[in-house]
Structures are given as C-alpha cells and as structure tokens.
Image 1 (spheres, one colour):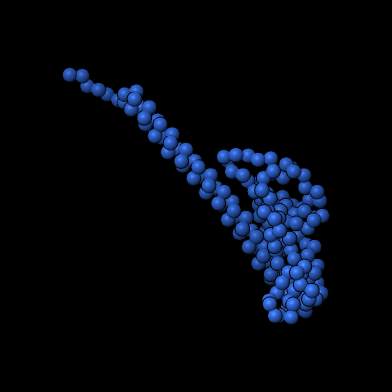
Image 2 (cartoon, rainbow, N blue to C red):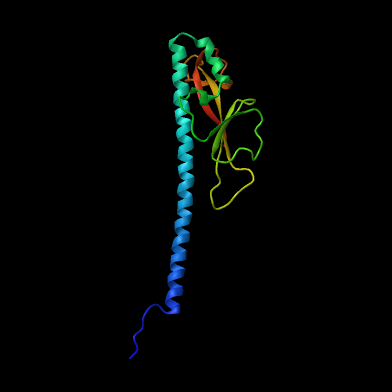
Length: 169
C-alpha cells in the first residue's frame, strides 16, 4: 500500500486557478474602492472650500462691506484655507496638458477656475483624464420671490452671497 504525500499536479493546478480568480476579483474591488475614495476626498475639499467661501462672504456682510463681495470672484478659493491640501500644486497661467499629474488640484489664473484632475484608475490609462472645474459665482436675490439665483440668471443688483459652482465634469 502506497502512502501519498502532497498534492497531485491536478490539485495544484485547480488551487492556483482558484487563487488567481479570487485575486482578480479582489483587485477589481480594490480599484473601485480607490476611485470612490478619491471622489470622496475631492468632494471633501470642495465642501471645505464652500464653507470657507460662505464664512468669508458672511464676514463681509456682517461688516457692511457688501461692495467687496464681487472681488471674491477673482480670488483663488484655496487662499481662504488655513492649510492647503497636500495635492494642491498652485496657481498657473496656462496649464499644459500632461504637466500636472492626475490626482492634483490647481488654480487657473486666466480663467479663474479651480481644477481637479482625476485619476483614471489602475485598470486603464487615458491621454486626457477627467477634469472637474469650479468657479466662484455671485448669488443675487430677485426680490426674494423665488429665492436666490446665480447672478447670470438674475437681473437683480442685490448680492446675497457667493457660491463655488462646478461648471464641468
């Protein structure tokens, strides 16, 4: 009677195939979670910027400096933060495609846009990764009837505040 020790070649092949399938499934889930984490981090920065912008406009209103509200349209929203995000690369006049790596923020001084360049994930690479662009816009109150509207959609001269609006995705 022969004692068999270890795996047969067939059992080893089946085990390797199962581990490969499980690893592939895990890798796809990890990539999905990384992309979701990046989206949440981006939205967190936008939320903090919106809060800082709201506090600055409330400060101007409380001090009776409403005439300075329109000056907020020309500032870099990152300048309102006590500490800028680690992935903020600064202000640029003319951003060149490929010079700013994905996963980073920058402020386009000429167009007054705050831009986030998204990563595309580990599964594929594209030449033009998705960009999320934000701009500071005035909010006006058209007689208070229908609530505040963005300045471009209202003919009122009463400024109610400013908002950070996503203009492209």
